[in-house]
Image: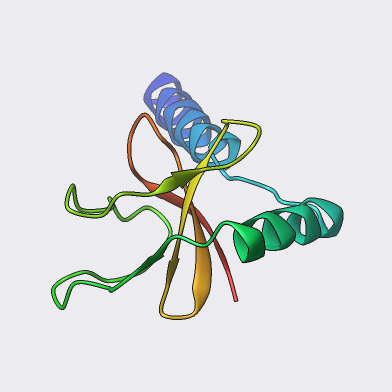
Length: 97
């Protein structure tokens, strides 16, 4: 019984670590650079009525994001906020207010 509890706890912690590993951290300096880039290269899109803008949401195919200079992320400006997108999964990874 102890083995099952230990195994369950290990699986739970591994899943939590995986979720944390996928969290995007943007430093204040990086955020300034992104804001300046987006200001000079805006890609403004209208939020579809059936789309909730949250981290983890998948951007609909009808939206065409721009690429950041480092090509690590794509971006759009939606509802007045800059949204960073993983180009491979089209998931929202960071939202700047």
